[in-house]
Image (cartoon, rainbow, N blue to C red; front, side):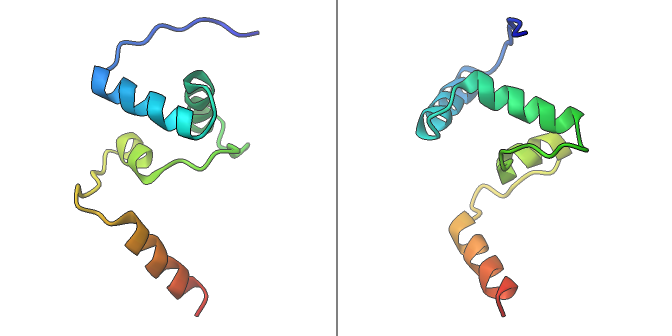
Length: 82
């Protein structure tokens, strides 16, 4: 059963989250639901990969603002497939 939830969030974050959801062709509600499920049910991994930014929010660690995600991922793949 779905239940309505009202959240107060920074307007800039809301706009970025809406754009992210639109790019993923998902509803923002579904993304929030999947994230909350991943936080509360560790035995059942979520079907969604949680981005480094979201992980940084939940862990309290900050991501550098100049981090080159593509470069980091490329280096990860090179190391992984050596």
